[in-house]
Length: 146
Image 1 (spheres, rainbow, N blue to C red):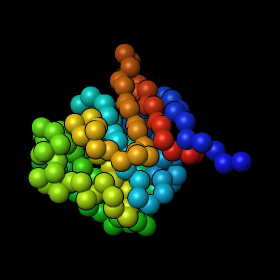
Image 2: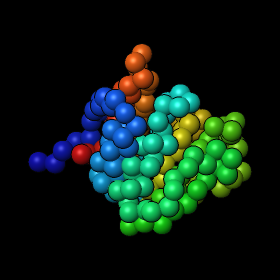
Image 3: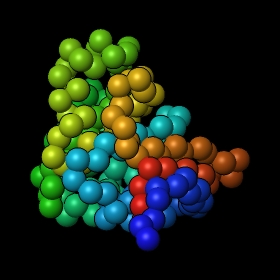
């Protein structure tokens, strides 16, 4: 019997724990996966991305592509890291050729993906991060079998 994807909630108390969760997630992602990263500024979306990149054996420094919009990395499979913070919706996303990255061969991480929610592919893994009162993180992950 195969496992069905379900929503799981994790609590992390440090940047290192958040990164380790990203690493665990990265090891579970098959090629072609789109990962929606949502949460307020400073929540840890890029920290999760760093953990995923580590799982893909990417040795480059992972930075949030707020101004470049898309960063591409090579590891055990390609990683496309997108930050849509500065975009205003689907038309902006289409104008940068973003839609073709939704159906790539590697992993596509999208920070601020709520701006293009309507066009995210079926099967998108969703990671929602909330910041707790004491600075810890509550991270809900859905759409992946661990």
